[in-house]
Image (cartoon, rainbow, N blue to C red; front, side, top):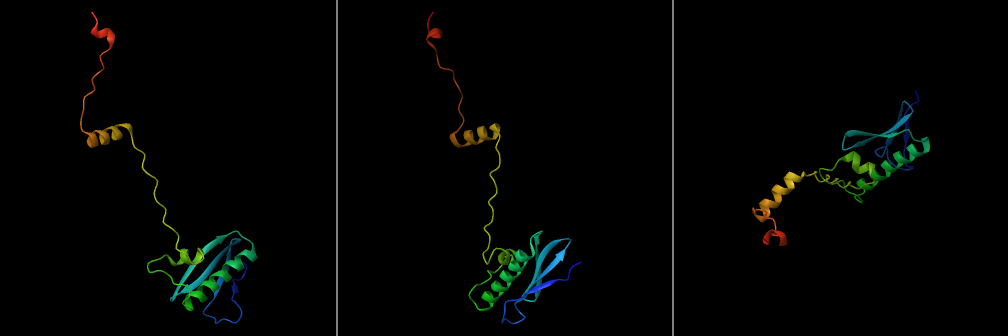
Length: 127
């Protein structure tokens, strides 16, 4: 098993540190925010791409510390840092499928009840 790889931006304090961990040929990023450790899996990516992802977390942590970026209250911290400092929009659920009977019931409730009467044809009025 490979040892964890640490990536830091040059000249920064050790507070800005995202660590890479290799597990079963898959990378994951570990970082600390407000005293808690967070992780997310990158998957089977190249070493360079994993290092860039860890460096991006370091950059975002620095920007938050410099008050150039703020983590919104109640936001998912991992998703915030994973999405480059943006809170992802919540997906709206797809509308539920409606049956014909339910559609008919809604229509009748909105427009009132009525009774269908067949139109009189020319033949029926003739003797």
